[in-house]
Length: 236
Ligand code: NAD
Image (cartoon, rainbow, N blue to C red; front, side, top):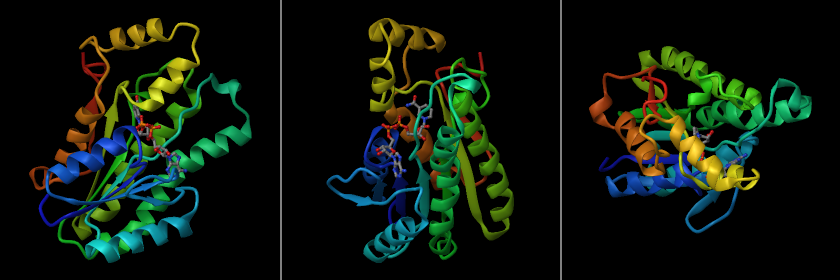
């Protein structure tokens, strides 16, 4: 990763924060973008294209370009299909799906100038597994998977690769918040761990390392692919 510049949306927490750390350890220069301000964070909202354009311009000016975009910013939604109204559907799709398109649009002028250009998106096991109480969230992550394939097809001729990862349940603040809303957080955590054949939650570093691989030169022949990081949930 030496000499490469990576931008990570949602870089302030969970999988995004793990990417910021692991990419830096691998020698990349990293720009963390997040809605929530924090040390080393460039503040932007993936619902706001102008804020993303300003963030990309700032990071490219500081580091001399952008080679890699990791779209990790996302929000959860719980419930069956009738559990959320139109406003909630619009809000979650705006962040999880259109947000990926917006950040990619903002980064593409810089990626086009790179000789090692890659976009890695965060899909989910929810895109393909039929999880209960996740209608809207699953729809959003299925759309991210489809968007990844379409972007890969459009950009392959320009030498830009686009992949996604599909994690199972990852031990991040996000899952902590979901567990805190249940009657039995410890029991629910054990149930989520048991759902994955490895018998434990995935770590944020394990997802970040899969993203690091997809974004790196070792994956130079891989585009339009989703890599499962789900403790065997989809494969076994
Ligand atoms: P997290 O809540 O720990 O981190 C998400 C980050 O995104 C936060 O820092 C938040 O401030 C930021 N964010 C939210 N809305 C934003 C916006 N509008 N603009 C800019 N930033 C915004 O969550 P996480 O668990 O690290 O999840 C990261 C990604 O991984 C999400 O896309 C999620 O769907 C996906 N994912 C997570 C899991 C899991 O089990 N944790 C599993 C599969 C996929």
